[in-house]
Length: 424
Image 1 (spheres, one colour):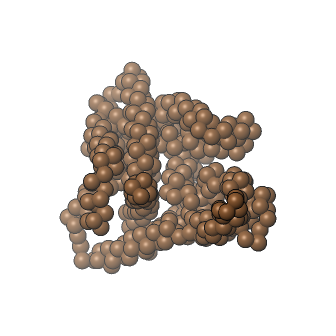
Image 2 (tube, helix red, strand yellow):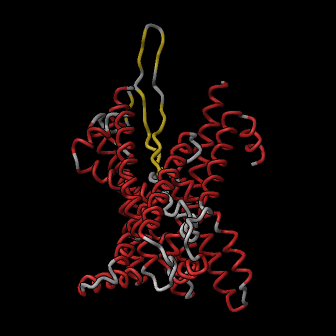
Image 3 (spheres, helix red, strand yellow):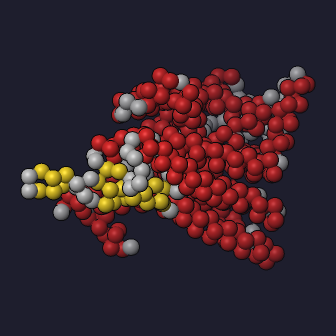
């Protein structure tokens, strides 16, 4: 390990990229601790400690919600905008054609995603402030309409700022910028969680702590297995004779990962599952009785651990399939193989190869998605056994942290391998 670290440090470009990413994450953490004036911090902390939904939202905003900071929403609006455009790409033919136009199409869709992020952030900032103002705890005393509008503009600007930082990080190819921002937010809260656990240590909780440690170990092992697991499809290249020289005739393989979507399905699932109860909170005190009753019913059903667990599991599995379909294109792979003179033994080139690859991916993604879904809801099951809700957040956070770390080291190793080939 130390040899690898020394090798990374000696490569100037890679070292500068890592230092740049670390600098951006530090700026993010500083911004997460710059509060918007006028909030009762004590009442706000009490509210987040007593509300499981807000506690989960706070984790994925990097603790910025609990601080009522200028980056209150984190990158949640950008994730929502990305989900919307990826769904539209599969439905709207023009967007689907644009997505197939290579780098130009990708940049165009990314630009529209950024534009959509701004109104979404503005709306979500209003919803969050309204939620805090309607809470039983008086979190925002004496907040005028102008102060609310100013806070909304500030929060929206904070989201755009984080979106920009995330894209700068992604350009360095050290990891996905959005995932790393969520990772930094989760990791920053670990010292406080460990400290509070040790401070309130009780021998009666030793069983719960052991169970939590076992769940954490199983989660880490499971995520590593499904992230690193892959199916190797044999590929052969036809021999070409030109004069006295023979080209091709190489046998290699096409690696298909069990979980090609990485940590994105978890982020998508959490973003979607938190949306209905958040909107319902805004209508719980309206004067129209049936609307208030419907909002209360939505909040209660999402607080039901059985419904929450099933919904979470289904969404993780569904988004794993969905995101794999977005990023994996068997037709293009089959076409590229045919152009290069490659073929899968026993399978005809072209459409037959594409159908074969799609069949294999569907099978292995089922295993990966099912395993990922089970790991995601495993802390929920444990929480029912131990009667502690901290495992719900801890398990989901651990799932994202491990996946992001694996993805980050994978990209670093890819850059090291590329430089080794350049030296040869």
